[in-house]
Length: 188
Image (tube, rainbow, N blue to C red; front, side, top):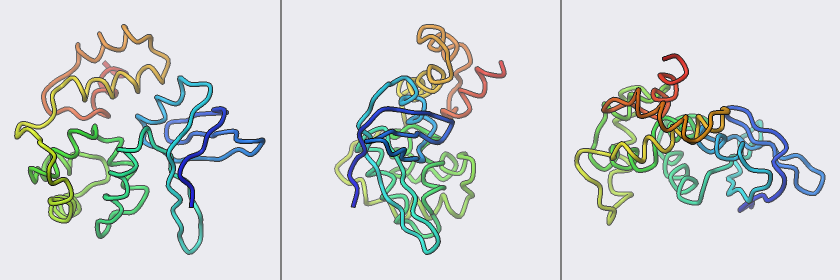
C-alpha cells in the first residue's frame, strides 16, 4: 500500500521518526540505527512497511530497501512480530545478522535483547535458505561494518563523527553487538 514517505524530518526519538509530509505528520517506528541516521537529516525519503493488525495500523520506517526486505523476512518467521523484528534489526548490523542466520549461529541471534534461544533457533531454521547466493564469511561480520552502525548511532546522539569513531574503537571487543558498543561508549 505504501512504498515510501518523503518529507521533512519533524522529530526523532530512539525508535520513532516523525515525517512531515504535506502538513501531515507520519510516525514511523524504526531501528535505533535508522533513527540515528535520520536524526542527522532535514529531509528524507524513507522506505516504509504498513503493519495491519486487528486493533491497529502501524508504519515502520527503514534505513534502506535492504533493511526493509530483511524486516519482511523476519516477520515471516513464526513468533516474530514487527516490534521484535525492529529490535533484531537494531541489535546487530544487517551483514552480521545475515551471517548469523546463514551460519545457524543461535548464540549470536539470542544475544539480541528480546530474542530467546527458541526464537533464535526458529529464525535460523526458517530463514536459512532465504539468503541463498549471498556469500557470508564463517567468522561473521568484520568489525568495521558493526562499528559503522555504532558510530552512526552515536552521531545521532550528538557525538562528532571523529569522536564517535575513536570512542567505538576504544571499547570495541569481538562479538559485541551495535547496542553493546553504544552502551559501552556511553557508560565507559
